[in-house]
Length: 621
Image (cartoon, rainbow, N blue to C red; front, top):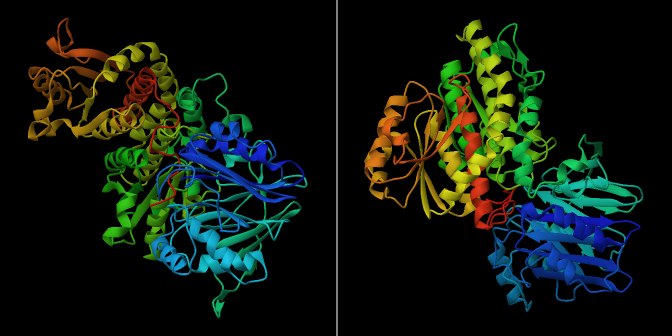
């Protein structure tokens, strides 16, 4: 969840490192630091706070054409200057930046302390610097390999060493690292965002892989070779750099005050992108060739299990509902973070679907590996080409949402829903979904981009409602059946960027406990689509109103809320969204909730793109 950058070449490293870190602050922004290697040796500067504060306090003489940098999301120890990366050994000859968690750090710290090493930080990372410094191997690569052989856990690391001033060494196990190839210079980063300004020719390291990087190129090795007397064998691998098709401007907020606002408004165009070429109106089906499953294999599927975390889990619930309704296949979603710890039963006729915007979410990646270890088939819904999950799964659907920088997911989530809809139609059409229903749903999908645009056009009215909601310390979000995952996602968005306490419940469950908390100070955002449950949903709103609870209702035009929606009624905000097919309505009901969360956070003066305690890409368990 932290950000790593590295540079070696003909330019001064520090400005490039700082610029790269600024582009990675969505991955962690508790503290930041850089180390450069020049004629006078290794120099380190780090401090708690944002990258701009590090840049403002950087010493004037901080020269060097080799360097590494880091922006941190704290896992071990509070965010302060000492715990910021890079970490060094006692002689300050080795500098290490690290993403991930070393599970046996406490034992290694105790061992180092017993040997007289004075550790100065609370971090797990510092032990790596000391282990590397204490190695007697003749090459930097072997020293790092020996240190990593003693580590249990996950890591993406970059190392600079004063005794080896012509190279950086990086290694990966569970945390992403990308090498960028330039003209007589090389870059390293944990995210493409830090590289695209300089190069789009990149190589992704695999788990268990190390690379030596010089100004002229890179060499990769496998860390998985046999050990001889404690010395791991490094085996050369044939990792090649490839060109990635990405527009560097996609990583700039441009005229928008935040990336989240930019990404909100990009949703119609990105929805068109994920649908393009994948809808078959003639046969009323989806065309998802990347699944690597033919019609016979699709028909053999008897269950679908969806794995995701946070918003990806909630949209997975929406996807499960689509699959059950349209394909008539039992389907459910569960948090990937819990999946492998309950010793799951993996069935040969179950299709597992891993959902992750970044494609690097460690909980989801580990769940994928658990399924595959037990012989299951996994497809991925991911947004980042070349990501760990994209390379691990047996097939999948790229989301084509474009880079998403804001921590709160918007356009990627919308495209996840659309991917699930296409998958459900394709699975349904090889079963019992009629061609008429298939064509009805394909027509509905083609209307989605324009309808999303219409919802976004109501932003000014939604901002007024959001201002009212921002005044509340606690909120409920409620929905039923198709509407419940919408409510869960709405509560997620609201809490993560407004910092208000927002909880989601099934509307039908209110009277079984949550209704006790309803009061004039606790508004409820209710999802009330014009479907077969509209009367039951409206009846529940009356129960809330009878307890004095203010209501914001997300619904369709023509839904009669009775006295609730008249002057003096409990409804303080009504939001009508365009109608689509009932099965597809959930995503249109979700869009206004994104805008409510955004404008509530704006009203409260929060940093919308970088909410406290959170980071964009969760690469630690």
